[in-house]
Length: 444
Image 1 (cartoon, helix red, strand yellow):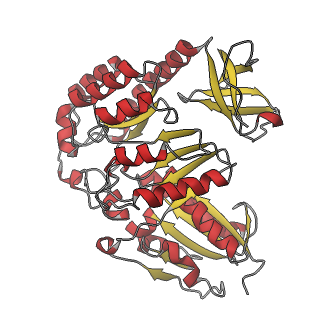
Image 2: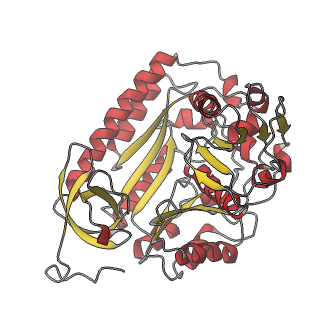
């Protein structure tokens, strides 16, 4: 009865959500569904939600209402972190048919036999303590770069964060099973894999293995030219991991470390598992071995307990770090978190002001990093998307390169000279003759 029905997915939040949506989408294809855009009229819409901030919750509600407006007769299913944390808020939205907790989102096919709207929504929550299974996932995009989920959940319970309540404790597949997933991705033609999860440095806690052991085995996977490590906690990014990446032929010189606060006092209030001295040591180690590495850093602005002086000290600390870009988030109160017990509250306008200051600093750092690399000839993996006669690719150290569209370069590792920063904020590149530059052949 479902053969030929149309399904549309609307995904919010992190790359982990996108990898999970892609995996669920493949299962729908196997069931006979046709996948269409969420802006089109579908028989069923599946919204995979995020709940990292109040703003994220608001965007989720807007997304739900948007697809209902697109087709009021469609079956509406909501999954993801917001669905686990606040299912009652979602089920109260008129038109929502199904809300699934973290345990059930990968079993969604059990609940959609006839796609019948019943007038009242069906709710299948779960206790987060019962979330034990690991569901492998990956997203292919245009089959150039793949986001591979290697880990889920978190044991850290930082005072500002709800992720452990939404996703449960840290867990993963075995190394051998993860390698098999990477090999499957390679067979589909992807050249680059980005390792993603909630707390990927914690990989192996549930299988008595380590993240370092994993990346050593992934290095051997044939058909994949590049691996990127997504966000990894600074206390879990050991010197041994950095040293391995520095000598690796496949793991690229790109790191993303969540700092969250540049003040030791605030880090302690957050119950982070490092201080800023250790963070600076990690940055110094990376730069000593990989001087042209791209280093992205997460920072929360205006968290509870962050005084004016704390912010000033943090700003000066971050300013001096040789990092490439900041991902800045104004602090958002989350129901059920320990941070709400901290009495000193930063007014919302002040949070936004501090976030703006950090965003300006980020723009300066990214511009400086790009300028340091102008004139170099680097290997670029170009994607297949044609954007009004332009195409884009990334260097190993995560510089976005823009060139005129050339279908022959799609999903190819090609050498290009970095020319100038253009008005789009990308770097204009020029593909070079590999023989003239005495470079290795272009990968096919």
